[in-house]
Image: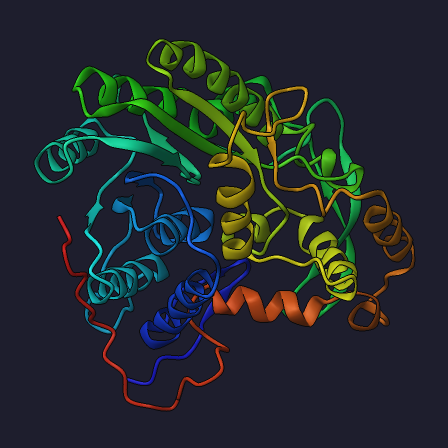
Length: 396
């Protein structure tokens, strides 16, 4: 079949296997072009098929030569319906790992469930013995609680008052104002339950109880802070409350793991094009302005560049891991530079529909969005007859 992009709002409902494979190959090539890393030996990545989770797995494998287990929720192709990009990404990763002689396994299942945790533990025990790095990179809008069966849904809303600011339709460049009503207490609570630290804590508890968490193990989750422009819908909103809970969990886990030399961190990442960020009003326009400024200054990073820098300069260094006063690993240090934010603020005040492509990198944002799904990737023949059915080697 000829696979074309079909989008609905901030979601693309199709994915291209060859394009996804090429995107993974480019990330692998980048890591292989960098100096080898001293790092983990056996790694579990929960949420391993896209974004920072996928990049973390690639860096651990191709940068440090680690064995990996990747857990993700993604479906294969069904009839004329393509698989999700995470499926194709994982297939490409497993193929590249096998060619490089690296040991790796992929497990598809609901990361929130007890059943997936048990399957993962059995796999680690059988194939690796234990893991010394656990990366938690789950981004889901909905969670079925494994103990009660209750369903929780997250929302992206401000807290306390209605919020209005600029936003952009990145498909057509129309700049408008978005108005978002404040969240209820119930919505705040449910968002924390979905996106906070409870499931991360459950994973570490289960791994530790099963004896498959190595002494001195590190565990890591990802967060975002961002500038004042986005605070109302992010850091000061429902997602921010969930991230506060995530950060509190890191402190509890450090106390839990410290007797055996273990540690837990939250890494604050740079704003990037993801399915999640595309869903948040205001954020796509901010990222488009940010990309223009950072590219002009020569300090722009994608997922893979940022994860390599984190492993090389934060996680696996001689001496203590560099953190801020809250114990956070700040990989957004270049984004939050005063000179960068000053220029973004200036652009923000001037951007309109008429000049958005001149004053921001909206075209780059749009292109990166479709590349998440394997489209608009140089070197891929999108008119070629392509089978959507792709097998993932070592899928459990």
